[in-house]
Length: 64
Image (cartoon, rainbow, N blue to C red; front, top):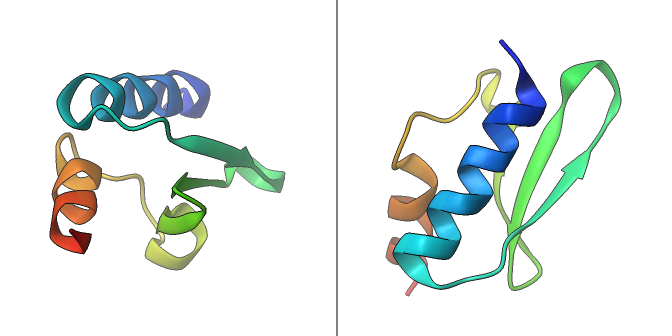
């Protein structure tokens, strides 16, 4: 899996569906973290997997 492509997909999804500007932090060994308004909303390291399509948007919406 190309994690950079996945991160770009996530960024585009959040920008188009929620009109938010997420930041994606890269770490070692293919790790990435998605932040919205300075809050971590998904960490590949903590989850042990990449998010499914729509998952990040649902998390952000639930945060209100």
